[in-house]
Image (cartoon, rainbow, N blue to C red; front, side):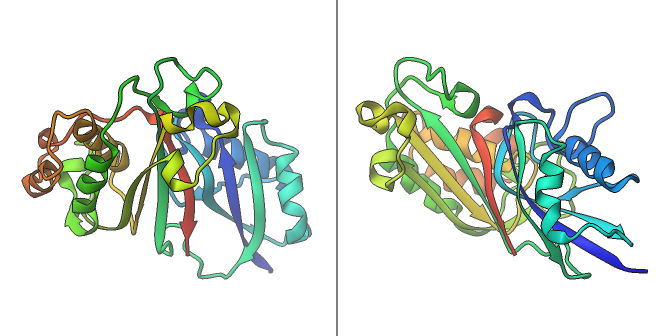
Amino acid sequence: MTARKIKLTVQYDGADYHGWQIQPGRRTIQGELSDAVTSLIGRKITVHGASRTDAGVSALGQAGVFEIVNCPIPTENFKQAINDRLPGDIVVTEAVEATRDFDVIGGAKSKLYRYTIYTGPNRPVLEVRHCWHIPAKLNVEAMKNAAQYLVGEHDFKSFASSKDNRETSVRTIFRCDVNSSLDSGIYNSRYAIRDTHDWLYIDVEGDGFLYNMVRNIVGSLVEVGIGRWPADKMKTVLEACDRTAAGPIAPPQGLCLMCVNY
């Protein structure tokens, strides 16, 4: 009996989905992928993911894995065969055979999320499903300074949803960068040169994340950016270990899982 693990790299627009995880009666990314692979293999298959992204959250580098036994399909054919069975807002960009001990969740060394904010006066109608529109000037330097308090190993309980019941809220953030499109070299071709300075990107890379952690971090950084908080308030928020000490949660549509590193 020949068993294989197939690792997928998946991109998706999460705007029309109720998150990654399968939920009865709701359209989810895991549900669509599992249905596509089940249709291809001819028996029930579940695709397991590295991150349970929330409703409305997108991904450019989600990792998924499924197991097959005595399947004649060559590994190199899975990518196109699965894509042929997926809706247009989900795509598999890579399918490779993983080792038998590959753990899609526990084996991840880091995950990188990017949050996108648009600060121009008018709604960016072509991108509004993938950003947080804040029509105000934000103090980027203050946000950068505040973000550095989050780097390192900390108890991030202040930034976790009350629904998160994991045993420990200690995580390590490797970097938390706040950049405008001009000083980061990121270019949004859809809006050309006239308003690239209105785009702001917050990149957070860590060894793991609590439920809603990145969105709560972004909401707190925005409090600094609009001048409600000084940058060093972030240290106080961390030490409080209390969700009520942090800022409001940022909306989901600005968040994207960029990659999972193994």
